[in-house]
Amino acid sequence: MNDTFGPARDFVGYANQPPLVQWPGEARIAVNFCINYEEGGELCILNGDDRSEVRLADVKVETRIGGRDLNIESSYEYGSRVGYWRILKAFTDRGQQATVNLVGLAGWQNPRALQAMIDAGFDLQPHGWRWFDYYGLDESEEREYIRNSIEQVRELTGQPPLGYYAGLPSLNTRRLVVEAGNFLYDSDVYNDDLPYWSRDFPELLLIPYSLDTNDSKFGRGESDYQLGDEFFTYLRDSFDILYAEGESQPKMMTIGLHARLIGRPGRIGSLHNFLDYLLRHDRVWICRRDDLARYWARHYPNSAA
Image 1 (cartoon, helix red, strand yellow):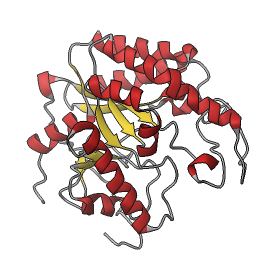
Image 2 (image 1 turned 180 degrees about the vertical axis):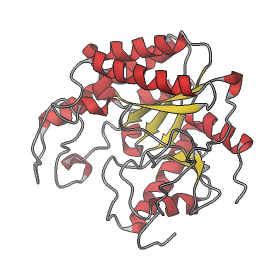
Image 3 (image 1 turned 180 degrees about the horizontal axis):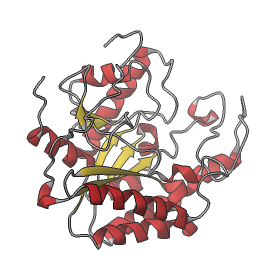
Protein backbone atom coordinates (compact mmCIF):
# COMPACT_ATOMS: atom_id res chain seq x y z
CA MET A 1 0.00 0.00 0.00
CA ASN A 2 1.27 3.47 -0.95
CA ASP A 3 0.27 5.91 1.81
CA THR A 4 0.20 8.72 -0.73
CA PHE A 5 -2.42 7.08 -2.91
CA GLY A 6 -4.25 4.85 -0.43
CA PRO A 7 -5.60 1.33 -1.01
CA ALA A 8 -4.71 -0.63 -4.12
CA ARG A 9 -7.38 -1.30 -6.74
CA ASP A 10 -8.34 -4.81 -7.84
CA PHE A 11 -10.33 -5.27 -11.04
CA VAL A 12 -10.22 -9.09 -11.01
CA GLY A 13 -11.37 -10.31 -7.61
CA TYR A 14 -12.66 -13.88 -7.53
CA ALA A 15 -13.44 -13.71 -11.29
CA ASN A 16 -15.18 -16.93 -12.37
CA GLN A 17 -13.77 -18.95 -9.46
CA PRO A 18 -15.39 -17.68 -6.25
CA PRO A 19 -14.80 -19.79 -3.15
CA LEU A 20 -17.25 -22.61 -2.58
CA VAL A 21 -19.00 -21.06 0.39
CA GLN A 22 -21.05 -23.07 2.85
CA TRP A 23 -23.11 -20.76 5.03
CA PRO A 24 -24.69 -22.00 8.29
CA GLY A 25 -27.71 -24.22 7.73
CA GLU A 26 -26.73 -24.72 4.08
CA ALA A 27 -28.08 -21.24 3.34
CA ARG A 28 -27.89 -20.05 -0.22
CA ILE A 29 -27.43 -16.46 0.89
CA ALA A 30 -26.29 -14.49 3.94
CA VAL A 31 -28.38 -11.33 4.41
CA ASN A 32 -27.20 -8.49 6.65
CA PHE A 33 -29.20 -5.35 7.46
CA CYS A 34 -27.24 -2.24 8.50
CA ILE A 35 -29.11 0.53 10.33
CA ASN A 36 -27.17 3.77 9.89
CA TYR A 37 -27.31 5.61 13.22
CA GLU A 38 -26.36 9.10 11.99
CA GLU A 39 -28.90 11.59 13.31
CA GLY A 40 -27.11 14.16 15.46
CA GLY A 41 -23.69 13.45 13.96
CA GLU A 42 -24.30 15.31 10.69
CA LEU A 43 -23.01 18.75 9.77
CA CYS A 44 -24.55 21.38 12.04
CA ILE A 45 -23.47 24.71 13.50
CA LEU A 46 -24.31 23.31 16.95
CA ASN A 47 -21.70 20.59 16.35
CA GLY A 48 -19.01 23.17 15.68
CA ASP A 49 -19.28 23.02 11.88
CA ASP A 50 -19.41 26.00 9.54
CA ARG A 51 -22.60 24.89 7.77
CA SER A 52 -25.72 22.78 7.92
CA GLU A 53 -26.09 19.33 6.37
CA VAL A 54 -27.58 19.01 2.87
CA ARG A 55 -27.58 15.25 2.22
CA LEU A 56 -30.00 12.33 2.50
CA ALA A 57 -33.16 13.85 3.85
CA ASP A 58 -36.71 14.50 2.64
CA VAL A 59 -36.06 18.22 2.34
CA LYS A 60 -33.82 19.65 -0.34
CA VAL A 61 -31.73 22.55 0.95
CA GLU A 62 -28.83 24.62 -0.30
CA THR A 63 -25.54 24.79 1.56
CA ARG A 64 -25.87 27.37 4.31
CA ILE A 65 -22.46 28.61 5.41
CA GLY A 66 -22.32 30.06 8.89
CA GLY A 67 -25.93 29.39 9.82
CA ARG A 68 -28.43 26.74 10.85
CA ASP A 69 -31.00 25.19 8.52
CA LEU A 70 -33.88 24.27 10.80
CA ASN A 71 -35.72 22.30 8.12
CA ILE A 72 -33.01 19.71 7.61
CA GLU A 73 -32.25 19.60 11.34
CA SER A 74 -35.87 18.72 12.02
CA SER A 75 -35.94 16.19 9.21
CA TYR A 76 -33.00 14.39 10.79
CA GLU A 77 -34.67 14.51 14.20
CA TYR A 78 -37.60 12.52 12.81
CA GLY A 79 -35.31 9.54 12.41
CA SER A 80 -34.02 9.85 15.94
CA ARG A 81 -37.40 10.47 17.57
CA VAL A 82 -39.62 8.10 15.56
CA GLY A 83 -37.87 6.16 12.81
CA TYR A 84 -35.53 4.06 14.97
CA TRP A 85 -38.42 2.69 16.96
CA ARG A 86 -40.30 1.63 13.82
CA ILE A 87 -37.23 -0.12 12.45
CA LEU A 88 -36.51 -1.84 15.76
CA LYS A 89 -40.07 -3.16 15.96
CA ALA A 90 -39.90 -4.51 12.41
CA PHE A 91 -36.98 -6.75 13.45
CA THR A 92 -37.97 -7.67 17.00
CA ASP A 93 -41.53 -8.60 15.99
CA ARG A 94 -39.93 -11.23 13.75
CA GLY A 95 -37.20 -12.31 16.13
CA GLN A 96 -34.46 -11.00 13.84
CA GLN A 97 -31.33 -8.94 14.45
CA ALA A 98 -29.41 -6.32 12.49
CA THR A 99 -26.19 -4.34 12.62
CA VAL A 100 -26.00 -0.71 13.76
CA ASN A 101 -23.64 1.49 11.73
CA LEU A 102 -22.93 3.79 14.65
CA VAL A 103 -21.83 7.39 14.18
CA GLY A 104 -20.26 8.09 17.57
CA LEU A 105 -21.71 11.53 18.25
CA ALA A 106 -25.16 10.40 17.13
CA GLY A 107 -25.03 7.58 19.67
CA TRP A 108 -24.61 10.05 22.52
CA GLN A 109 -27.35 12.33 21.14
CA ASN A 110 -29.96 9.58 21.44
CA PRO A 111 -28.66 6.83 23.73
CA ARG A 112 -32.13 5.49 24.53
CA ALA A 113 -32.89 4.14 21.05
CA LEU A 114 -29.33 2.87 20.70
CA GLN A 115 -29.52 0.97 23.98
CA ALA A 116 -32.79 -0.60 22.87
CA MET A 117 -31.04 -1.96 19.77
CA ILE A 118 -28.15 -3.27 21.85
CA ASP A 119 -30.64 -4.93 24.21
CA ALA A 120 -32.26 -6.56 21.17
CA GLY A 121 -28.92 -8.14 20.28
CA PHE A 122 -27.87 -5.85 17.43
CA ASP A 123 -24.11 -5.50 16.95
CA LEU A 124 -22.31 -2.16 16.60
CA GLN A 125 -20.07 -1.24 13.68
CA PRO A 126 -18.49 2.23 14.07
CA HIS A 127 -19.51 4.52 11.20
CA GLY A 128 -17.06 7.31 12.01
CA TRP A 129 -17.28 9.67 14.96
CA ARG A 130 -19.05 12.21 12.77
CA TRP A 131 -21.18 11.72 9.67
CA PHE A 132 -19.12 13.67 7.18
CA ASP A 133 -16.46 13.29 4.51
CA TYR A 134 -13.11 12.22 5.99
CA TYR A 135 -11.19 13.03 2.82
CA GLY A 136 -8.56 15.62 3.66
CA LEU A 137 -9.08 15.37 7.42
CA ASP A 138 -5.86 15.61 9.40
CA GLU A 139 -4.54 12.11 10.07
CA SER A 140 -4.09 12.68 13.80
CA GLU A 141 -7.69 13.89 14.10
CA GLU A 142 -9.06 10.89 12.24
CA ARG A 143 -6.97 8.57 14.42
CA GLU A 144 -8.51 10.17 17.49
CA TYR A 145 -12.02 9.76 16.08
CA ILE A 146 -11.39 6.05 15.52
CA ARG A 147 -10.06 5.71 19.06
CA ASN A 148 -13.19 7.47 20.38
CA SER A 149 -15.42 5.04 18.45
CA ILE A 150 -13.59 2.04 19.84
CA GLU A 151 -13.94 3.28 23.40
CA GLN A 152 -17.61 4.12 22.89
CA VAL A 153 -18.47 0.61 21.71
CA ARG A 154 -16.41 -0.86 24.54
CA GLU A 155 -18.32 1.27 27.03
CA LEU A 156 -21.69 0.29 25.57
CA THR A 157 -21.10 -3.43 25.08
CA GLY A 158 -18.07 -4.39 27.16
CA GLN A 159 -16.16 -5.39 24.00
CA PRO A 160 -14.29 -3.41 21.32
CA PRO A 161 -15.86 -3.36 17.84
CA LEU A 162 -14.84 -5.88 15.19
CA GLY A 163 -15.67 -3.79 12.13
CA TYR A 164 -15.46 -0.24 10.82
CA TYR A 165 -17.32 1.69 8.11
CA ALA A 166 -16.42 5.34 7.56
CA GLY A 167 -18.76 5.75 4.59
CA LEU A 168 -16.68 8.58 3.14
CA PRO A 169 -13.15 7.41 4.03
CA SER A 170 -9.88 9.25 3.64
CA LEU A 171 -6.83 7.74 1.97
CA ASN A 172 -5.57 7.02 5.50
CA THR A 173 -8.70 5.38 6.94
CA ARG A 174 -7.94 1.72 6.24
CA ARG A 175 -4.37 2.01 7.50
CA LEU A 176 -5.59 3.73 10.67
CA VAL A 177 -8.19 1.00 11.17
CA VAL A 178 -5.45 -1.62 10.97
CA GLU A 179 -3.17 0.38 13.27
CA ALA A 180 -5.94 0.48 15.89
CA GLY A 181 -5.28 -3.23 16.40
CA ASN A 182 -8.73 -4.59 17.21
CA PHE A 183 -10.62 -4.64 13.91
CA LEU A 184 -11.26 -7.89 12.07
CA TYR A 185 -13.01 -6.25 9.12
CA ASP A 186 -13.59 -3.05 7.17
CA SER A 187 -16.78 -2.34 5.20
CA ASP A 188 -15.63 0.59 3.04
CA VAL A 189 -15.87 -1.39 -0.21
CA TYR A 190 -18.72 -1.93 -2.70
CA ASN A 191 -17.03 -4.21 -5.22
CA ASP A 192 -18.18 -7.78 -4.57
CA ASP A 193 -21.00 -10.07 -3.43
CA LEU A 194 -18.70 -11.92 -1.04
CA PRO A 195 -16.19 -10.94 1.66
CA TYR A 196 -12.52 -11.05 0.72
CA TRP A 197 -9.15 -10.43 2.34
CA SER A 198 -7.34 -7.13 1.79
CA ARG A 199 -4.36 -7.20 -0.55
CA ASP A 200 -2.75 -4.33 1.34
CA PHE A 201 -3.37 -5.72 4.82
CA PRO A 202 -3.73 -9.53 4.59
CA GLU A 203 -5.13 -9.89 8.12
CA LEU A 204 -7.98 -7.45 7.43
CA LEU A 205 -11.22 -8.84 6.03
CA LEU A 206 -13.19 -6.61 3.67
CA ILE A 207 -16.98 -7.07 3.78
CA PRO A 208 -18.66 -5.17 0.94
CA TYR A 209 -21.42 -2.72 1.79
CA SER A 210 -24.07 -1.67 -0.75
CA LEU A 211 -25.39 1.64 -2.02
CA ASP A 212 -27.92 0.10 -4.40
CA THR A 213 -29.84 -2.12 -1.96
CA ASN A 214 -30.00 0.93 0.26
CA ASP A 215 -32.86 3.23 1.25
CA SER A 216 -30.56 6.24 0.76
CA LYS A 217 -31.94 6.27 -2.76
CA PHE A 218 -35.08 7.85 -1.27
CA GLY A 219 -32.98 10.92 -0.48
CA ARG A 220 -30.72 11.21 -3.51
CA GLY A 221 -33.00 13.05 -5.93
CA GLU A 222 -36.22 12.90 -7.90
CA SER A 223 -34.84 10.22 -10.25
CA ASP A 224 -34.55 7.72 -7.39
CA TYR A 225 -37.13 5.99 -5.18
CA GLN A 226 -40.36 7.84 -4.47
CA LEU A 227 -42.50 4.91 -3.31
CA GLY A 228 -41.84 2.14 -0.82
CA ASP A 229 -42.84 -0.44 -3.44
CA GLU A 230 -39.90 0.63 -5.60
CA PHE A 231 -37.48 -0.16 -2.76
CA PHE A 232 -39.15 -3.49 -2.03
CA THR A 233 -39.10 -4.47 -5.71
CA TYR A 234 -35.41 -3.72 -6.06
CA LEU A 235 -34.57 -5.64 -2.87
CA ARG A 236 -36.69 -8.59 -3.97
CA ASP A 237 -35.19 -8.70 -7.46
CA SER A 238 -31.65 -8.50 -6.05
CA PHE A 239 -32.39 -11.24 -3.55
CA ASP A 240 -33.99 -13.51 -6.17
CA ILE A 241 -30.90 -13.46 -8.40
CA LEU A 242 -28.49 -14.01 -5.51
CA TYR A 243 -30.69 -16.77 -4.07
CA ALA A 244 -30.80 -18.53 -7.43
CA GLU A 245 -27.03 -18.22 -7.86
CA GLY A 246 -26.64 -19.49 -4.32
CA GLU A 247 -27.78 -22.96 -5.34
CA SER A 248 -24.24 -23.54 -6.57
CA GLN A 249 -22.34 -20.42 -5.44
CA PRO A 250 -23.73 -18.91 -2.21
CA LYS A 251 -23.45 -15.14 -1.88
CA MET A 252 -24.14 -12.33 0.58
CA MET A 253 -26.45 -9.31 0.48
CA THR A 254 -26.31 -6.11 2.54
CA ILE A 255 -29.29 -3.78 2.96
CA GLY A 256 -28.62 -0.24 4.21
CA LEU A 257 -31.32 1.54 6.23
CA HIS A 258 -31.71 5.09 7.57
CA ALA A 259 -34.27 5.91 10.25
CA ARG A 260 -35.13 9.32 8.79
CA LEU A 261 -35.90 7.68 5.42
CA ILE A 262 -37.27 4.13 5.78
CA GLY A 263 -38.76 5.06 9.17
CA ARG A 264 -41.48 7.18 7.55
CA PRO A 265 -45.01 5.71 7.56
CA GLY A 266 -45.18 5.59 3.76
CA ARG A 267 -41.96 3.56 3.51
CA ILE A 268 -41.68 1.27 6.54
CA GLY A 269 -44.07 -1.19 4.90
CA SER A 270 -41.42 -1.99 2.29
CA LEU A 271 -39.12 -3.20 5.07
CA HIS A 272 -41.89 -5.30 6.62
CA ASN A 273 -42.68 -6.80 3.23
CA PHE A 274 -39.08 -7.65 2.45
CA LEU A 275 -38.43 -9.21 5.86
CA ASP A 276 -41.54 -11.37 5.41
CA TYR A 277 -40.39 -12.27 1.90
CA LEU A 278 -37.03 -13.45 3.24
CA LEU A 279 -38.66 -15.49 5.96
CA ARG A 280 -40.72 -17.39 3.39
CA HIS A 281 -37.46 -18.86 2.06
CA ASP A 282 -35.84 -21.75 3.92
CA ARG A 283 -32.17 -21.36 3.02
CA VAL A 284 -31.48 -17.80 4.15
CA TRP A 285 -29.07 -16.77 6.91
CA ILE A 286 -30.16 -13.37 8.28
CA CYS A 287 -27.09 -12.40 10.23
CA ARG A 288 -25.30 -9.64 12.05
CA ARG A 289 -22.17 -8.31 10.39
CA ASP A 290 -19.91 -9.39 13.24
CA ASP A 291 -21.22 -12.95 12.98
CA LEU A 292 -20.63 -13.00 9.24
CA ALA A 293 -17.07 -11.76 9.71
CA ARG A 294 -16.27 -14.31 12.41
CA TYR A 295 -17.70 -17.10 10.30
CA TRP A 296 -15.67 -16.12 7.25
CA ALA A 297 -12.45 -15.72 9.21
CA ARG A 298 -12.91 -19.13 10.82
CA HIS A 299 -13.90 -21.06 7.67
CA TYR A 300 -12.09 -19.10 4.94
CA PRO A 301 -8.85 -17.76 6.45
CA ASN A 302 -6.39 -15.94 4.25
CA SER A 303 -3.73 -18.36 3.12
CA ALA A 304 -1.48 -15.40 2.25
CA ALA A 305 -1.55 -13.94 5.78
